[in-house]
Amino acid sequence: MQESLFKIQFETANDSIKRMLNIQYRMYPIIMGAINQFYDGKLECGILEPDTKREHNLAGEIIQQSKHLI
Image (cartoon, rainbow, N blue to C red):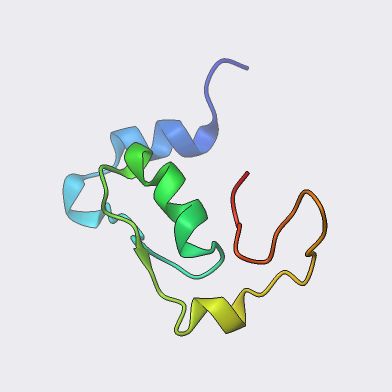
């Protein structure tokens, strides 16, 4: 398998039906910022109050409460 079916269908689809989903709700904004370079800076964070909504509660020696990307 050289190419996925999704890739083939996307590349052959008419431009009028292609859309980029640019609002994401899963990543903390700092993590999103690290990968936004691959999306030409077009990703936006849709999480309201990300500090409380994405609290990881894993604070320790290596993972700190204020660090979301290591």
